[in-house]
Image (cartoon, rainbow, N blue to C red; front, side, top):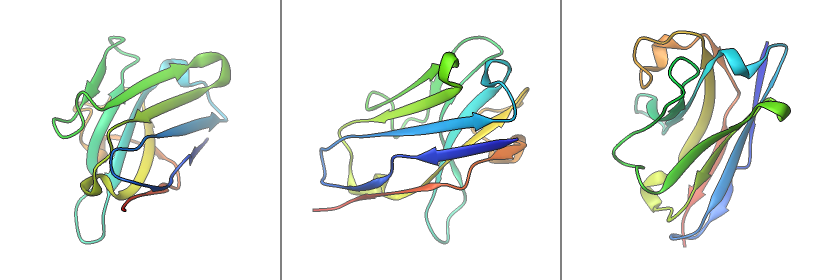
Length: 123
């Protein structure tokens, strides 16, 4: 079971990036997929989740209206489209999978993790 996150990079404030999380060894259809981010010295923060359980999508207040999570089950991939990026969005972004997280935003609820991709928002 592997998750591979990609798509990070350096972008100016107001710009956009699309992160991708590709799964191998299992089918994403049956999993809730979360995106998390972390900066040094801080706890990992839940950003968004695509729920297999109820088909819903969830966002933290800090990214609501700017980020969009989507799935392409044929490609076994989940995307995070990030628009109107701000310097405070700078972090390493991770994708994670779990079949039944009790709280989508709690990183401790997820069993499988990708290695992370770095997003830097700076002029």
